[in-house]
Image 1 (tube, rainbow, N blue to C red):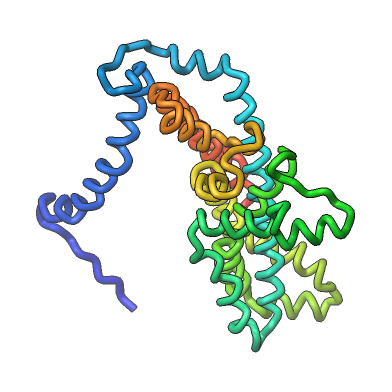
Image 2 (image 1 turned 90 degrees about the vertical axis):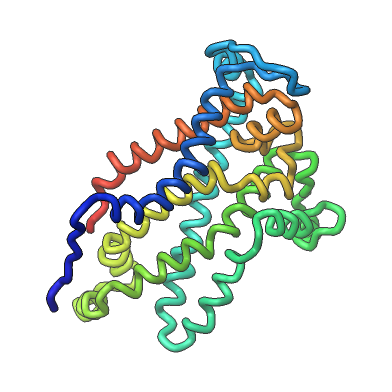
Length: 294
């Protein structure tokens, strides 16, 4: 099969093809990012009557604030736990469905459905399940002798938002893990089974190494999801409380900007959050990717 290559005689037509994508990127990414950086260097009047250039003062105030440093710790615990729970559960489900040769197609839509649920709706669902007054799960925990009240206990509130955020992401991870498993040649699995390797050893020595590109991709996506895309879940379940026990970096940036009307501090937090995620992504591609086998 021969490959047909298109050669353009000038640069105008290729540029015209690229123009829509470049325009969308500039309008929805570079322009807001530049505005956030600019705004982080100013102190805005809460009523919109003006702004004053303060340089790096907004950043200095952030790192001197105990509340902001506490949100760092909450974000790290939340991101690591959510990523591990979402990816681990999805991998187990994908392996189980992959082994169901005939009934797998029936289970797949049931597992994928939660991905269609909006983050705020997912948060409300888990809020009802764990509500200490009317929640079914809270009632069962009380019956087992476990006192559950995430409205008062910060650790329980953090567990709740981790479970809710991970549940929302399991479907996405499941699709990729299942596709990766189905791309592994059956002949390798069968040859290992003939040689006497059990299911656990086959998974550890054959399946997981061949899944490493998918796992690496999902690791990056889940870290970004935990940092940026979990605002709706947290707001619907705990609203960042009790106290600040579930206030992540992105939630604090929203609270300081929209509730506290401190636009300069909110913009500075957005810049710091973006820098952290970029740094984590670079570290993942520079160090973790070396263990990936393509």
